[in-house]
Length: 222
Image 1 (tube, helix red, strand yellow):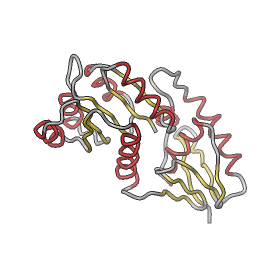
Image 2 (spheres, rainbow, N blue to C red):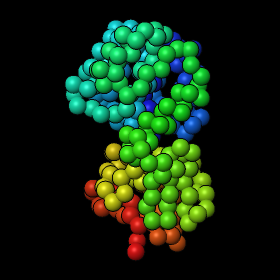
Image 3 (cartoon, one colour):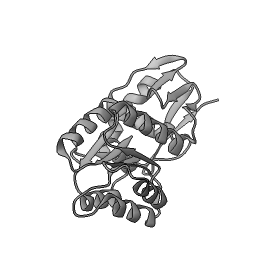
């Protein structure tokens, strides 16, 4: 899954980015509100971690624009200000959670997990497709009861497919969830990851189906 982190303190941003990436997420890090607003208009994110005190456009205005466009991705607001008025304003504008600095990295990770579980999986901890199970809290797959270890990009592709079992996803959609802003987003590379995943799912009840020119879907065979 892909997360947008917007924090103008470069040292803190680097620390938060490294912590989130170590959890297996693809993280785009930006440092001002205008850049964040553009990224949210054009890129595909599952969640945004948004500082309030940003240059050029503050976090409240970025959030306001996001919600006015009808975008529903989960948002955690960060602030050095702990006043009730700020928290109320952020929540009224559509923030899903609010974290006052300073905070422990483990708390941010736990809140990210909880929000993604709620927004993408309806609060459920696990997603199932036949004998394939994905635990969002641990961010681990099991197949036929055995751990399925995957490189990060194959993991991201399968994570995206199991979030929408039986529904088509195009190569461009998958590439948008796998590659960050600083990476070469290649829809053609998705074909390679799909091929590798098929080999790892071979012999199970789960398969990835190709609809030529349209995309892929994950389904469980009877």
